[in-house]
Structure formats: structure tokens, C-alpha cells
Length: 221
Ligand SMILES: Nc1ncnc2c1ncn2[C@@H]1O[C@H](COP(=O)(O)OP(=O)(O)O)[C@@H](O)[C@H]1O
Ligand SMILES: [Mg+2]
Image (cartoon, rainbow, N blue to C red):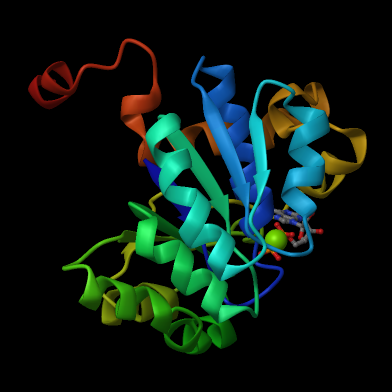
């Protein structure tokens, strides 16, 4: 499946979460491709050195995405696509093939108000594709002691967006990991809280990626 991290706002945590998801899936033994669809190439640069077992590709234009992503989707059980900021055409192309769109967003009043505008291409794709991709918002860079604000809950609900229960907090470990050619999952003690919260988030979003997970048992319990 293709899991795309999108939000036309930059600096919301798309590359950080996309690269971390690649590292997490690889650590669980999966064959994973990273499709870096941002011309800034931050996630591909990072993951190529930090997660050698991941297969890294760069598709900086809409044409390359439409031409190459279908083949990647056939070849890999997990394709993680890191979307661009401002280049909406690239994001549109990505959502023609994505099964799941994850929308990282910061949790402020301003962000809540801008969410509709920054994710309009998600709803446009869903209208064309009969509801696909499934879209989930993830709050990123939330402060300590943070409580889910009503603004964000209402903004997500108004857009028919699911909101992940687990939020990603603001931590230096996330900003430090790429510079150390690591993911937070292999950055040791200083990144343990970050690694823990991302594991909880990714297990919430992709329970089927955990080895030994059985859908039937999951539903019985
Ligand atoms: N949870 C976090 N806590 C602290 N810094 C973060 C967090 N997530 C991302 N960052 C930092 O914020 C900046 C923007 O994140 P990035 O993932 O590049 O966003 P995007 O891909 O949406 O532009 C980067 O410098 C990154 O290291
Ligand atoms: Mg990015």
C-alpha cells in the first residue's frame, strides 16, 4: 500500500514522520520503499544513510510520480511517500495512487483555521476516487501538557478527517536524529520518549504491520 504524508503547509513534520515510519516498518522486518516527492530531498538524504535496508526513490515531479509510483506499489508491500509543501500538483499526483493520506498538522488556532485550505486537494482526490485515499490527521509538535483543543477537533470533524488518538510532541530528539544519520528508533536513551510515542502512533495507525498481528484475534479481544 501507498501511505502518503501530505499538507501543503511546510514545516509541519511530513518528512520527519515519513522517514520515521520507514525506519519503524523496516525494524519490523518489512520491505519498504521511500518515495521522496519533495524537491528539497530531505527525507531521502536522511533515510539513505540512516536506514540502509530501505529502498529510496526520488520523484520530485507529478509526471515522475504518475509514471513510477504504480510500479513501486506493485513491487513493495509498503511505499511511504513524503509529499512536498507548496507544489500542489505533485501532491495531487500522489493522491491519485495513495491508499492512505496522513496529514501532520500543528495544533494551534491558526493551523486549525488553515487546515481546510491546506488539505483541499485531499477532498478533491476523494471525490474523484470514490472516497480514497482514507485521510487521517496527526497532531505534530504539540507542547508538553497539551490537551486536544476544541478548535482542532472541530476543524478535523468539519473536514471529515479522522484525528489520530496519539499526538507527536515537540522534542529535540526529532530535530537531532537526521543530523546524526539516525532515526529516533536507534538514537538511544536521549530519544527513548520520542521512539516510544511514535511506536504508539504507528501501532495505532498500522496494527497489521506488527508481526504476529492477526485481524481475527484483534477483533475478538
Ligand atoms: N515533533 C517534533 N519536535 C521537534 N522538532 C520537530 C518535530 N517534527 C519535526 N521537527 C523539525 O521541524 C522541522 C520541520 O519538519 P519537517 O518534517 O521537515 O516538516 P515538513 O516535511 O512538513 O516540511 C525540521 O527541522 C524537523 O527536524
Ligand atoms: Mg518535508
